[in-house]
Structures are given as structure tokens and as C-alpha cells.
Length: 382
Image (cartoon, rainbow, N blue to C red):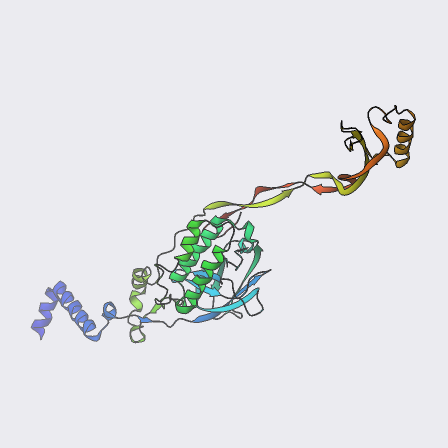
């Protein structure tokens, strides 16, 4: 034993190395360095029912396509349809969302007469935070103002058709199967009813079902649950917390979505430019008169092709009688005055348009103008 002690004192570095090796071996055997083999367990997502309230001032009914909510986050990107209730112009639906931050925008419905809705008054897409511990769940309100069919442009319809196709392709259960087929059938008929729609947009709407996988699996609306360390190894991993978190931070979430780049587009509307003018008022009146006879060239025969006198512009029967009396007094031996027989006449009449007053009319015109500028992809408005 004394020999061993003497050897140890003379070989201190070797003894230290052997001691470390023994400690490491014991640690490995006991699992102190087992953190590299631990498996994370998935944490159950906590969800909240988010309410979508859509209202319209007019025209949104059972024959319209639904308002479609587009819901995006780092983990999900899907669409959800909101249909009007039995009374029309109002629809409410709920979407189950996991905790996190979301952006919500809407696609305009198309009504059976080809009209649509201005939803840009809701401003930019709505950002919400879903928190299961919050006292109240988020509610999103989307008011819509009807745009008459003759004011809905072909570009607007084409945009709605394309966005509706995207919605069917990436939709939840409200946009798949029979529900999705019914929506596309309404879209086809309603778009075709618009007076401004082009043949190209009509065809796009009629073939909207192609390539959208309408009977496919509904989109994921919850997303992947967050990971957490397994309970049995929680203490063992404590010494490596810094390294394990930094190494897994990028894998537990999708990469951040690039910042949205707005594509600004001019929205045009029409306004009336007034031009008031005075317009005469006319009525049809019957005017009576007298036509005198002249000789035909055959002795004793006369024809009514003589002078005509009309009882208009102040000329009266008394004036006609005065002409007759004067002509008879100055008649020649044949009873004619200036070749006309004034002893009798033919009653005649005609119709004329007589001004009886006037009124004011607005002979103005419509002019196009830019009423606002909006992003064609997200709906944000300047």
C-alpha cells in the first residue's frame, strides 16, 4: 500500500487522468449524458373558437356565393366559407384556431344578378392573436357594401373567380365536397349574369372546378403542436438547455413569412356630371281651315286647289269672312276674283306640334374617376 502511495505521488498527472476517466464512465452508466438521445414529446395545442361576423347592406342571400375568409399564420393557410342566414344580408360562423397570431381577409361574394361587394371598407386584413387564457375570444366583423352589377368590372369578377378557386383548393370542410360544388355552381351562374363580364372570365368561372381537388382532404386548420422535452429527462437536460433550445428553435416553427409586398391598383368608380338645360314642351293640336275652288279648264267645273287659310296664329273666321266679302265685291263677270271662286270653300284640317311650355332636364353624363387605391392581393387600401 505504501508502494502504491509512493507511485501515486510520483505520477500525479496520470492519477488525475485515471480519476476523470472513472467519473466519466460512471456518469455514462448512470445516464447523465443521455440528453442527446432524449425524444421531445408534442405539446397538445390549446384552441379557441373565433367568430366571423359578415354583414351586407343589400343583396346577399341564399342564391349568392359565400363570403370567404382567408386565414393565415406561420403554421396554417386556409379558407373558410361564411354563408348568409335565412333572412339574408347577415352570416356568422366560427373557426377553431390554435393559440398564435393570425391574419384574416375576405373574398367578396357574387350575387345572382352579377352584383358584388366592396369589402375594402374593412381596411387592411385584420390581425388577431388567439390566446386560450384571454377573457373573451376574438371576433372579426366584415361589413360589405353592395356594388350594383353594372358597376362591377370584369377585372373585379376575374379576381373574385381566381380567389374563389384558391379558396376551394385550400379550403376547410366548408369549401370541400358538395359544399364546394354548390359554391362553384353559383359562381358560374352569378358571374355570367353580370353585364360587364368578358367571355374569358365566364369560361374561367365555368371551368373553376378543374384542378382545385374539390373532393380532396380539407386544409389543416390547427397546425403542428409545439414540442416540449419529455418529462423523464427534464432534469437531465437542464445543464444543456442553452444548446438544445438554440439548436431546435428553427425546427419547431415554420420560417417567418416574408413581408407582404403590396400591389397597388387604382379602383375606379363613376360619378354624374350635371348639365341642366331647358326643354320645350309640345302637344299635338288640330288646326282647321278653308281651301277655295278654281276652274279646271272645263266650263262649269271647279277643283279645290285654290288659296288655303288656316285658323291659327290669330287668324279667325271673321278674318276669312272679310276676305270672302271683298273678293265677291271685286269679282269679274265669271264670278272669279284673281281666278278664284270665293263663293264657296272646302273645309280642311291639319295637326301641328304646338309649344305649350317648357321644363328643366339634366343632360349630364357619367365620368370615370379613381376613388381609392388598393392592394389587389390583400385588399389594403390607401
